[in-house]
Length: 65
Length: 160
Image 1 (cartoon, rainbow over the protein chains, first blue to last red):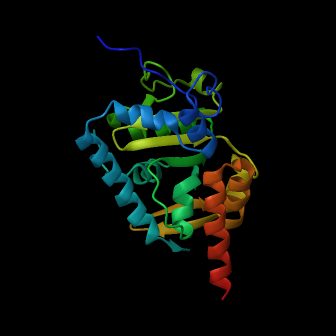
Image 2: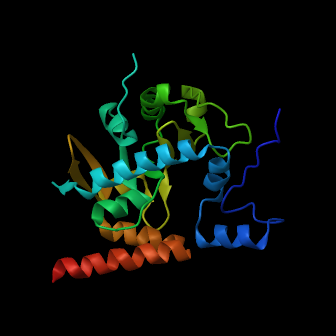
Image 3: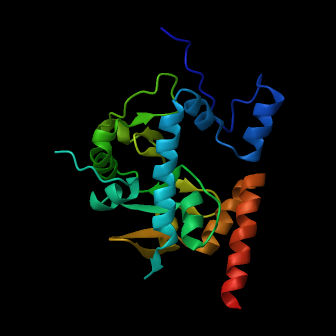
């Protein structure tokens, strides 16, 4: 049992949201990703961020062909 | 058989998925210093290509991240035909697949303005820096304007 998951389609569903959420959406922040992260444990957030960092390091070392 | 590659991009390349890396990670390839977590690609939305993608992600519990119940990814040839974009979450992070990039065009047009890069053991297509700037300018959010600043600065620095 749990609350129904809130889905915010970043570029459209701002009506009725708080000023902070609207500002984040308009800035270009993926608010749905924030909502998804709230469902994760800190350990899982860190694991996923490490995957992103590993990908970043790999791409930073990429060479044009 | 599970093919546990630790990187979403490696999986797509190894599966022969037809795609071009766009968005934040494309900026990273061109030298941007920001950190981003989500992978954005422009890809061929043909059923064959999407089914290959689904196979590549099959052991990563891919879900449609923009649906209230995070529906599992279960594409068929019939359902593929209606798709224009796919917003997925997987065990290895978020993957957004787009059939059209504002400021650039459809997949073939994006592919025409892509460059090949080698990253570790793989080669992949990345949107070129000019087209990435055009795409970011088309979005025109503050975050995109910051990316444009970095990209235009990188262009300038390369010429010096």
